[in-house]
Amino acid sequence: MSLDKPASIEVLLSRASESLAAGRTDLYCLPLLPLLEHPWSKVLAEVSKSVTQFKGLEDKADSLPTEVVTFALESQRPYWVGLALAWLEDGFPRSGRIKEELFSISQTKHIPQQKRHVAWKLHHENEERA
Image (cartoon, rainbow, N blue to C red; front, top):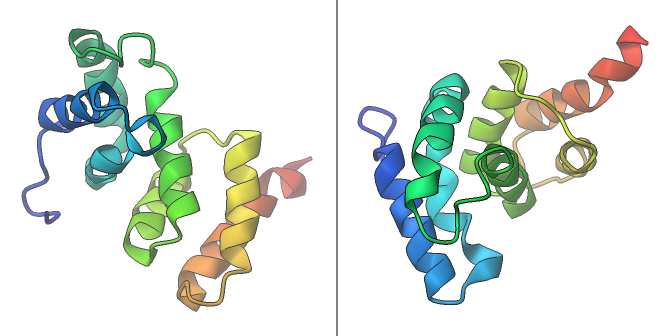
């Protein structure tokens, strides 16, 4: 998959639904990682519009984007981490779990230094405003 032509959001939701149907509840976010290749505002609108069409995802309209960002950060794969960080830098809301993962990323040596610095900054951003 490339940023030039990311997979459609409906195709990704379908793959996640199939994953859930196959009993892979712990990995159903894996086929959703390419959502991060789309702008998060587009994903939020499309997911809330389309998610009810897919078995197993019907009740996840509000939580799905957060679950995908968390999954990407937990994966500690530099590509997905970078895309999740870009969403967060663009204003995607940060839950407590995401803040924990940001701290973890900032301390992980196999993540490129620039991404660790971004994670550190995002982790501490709200503290500086208080």
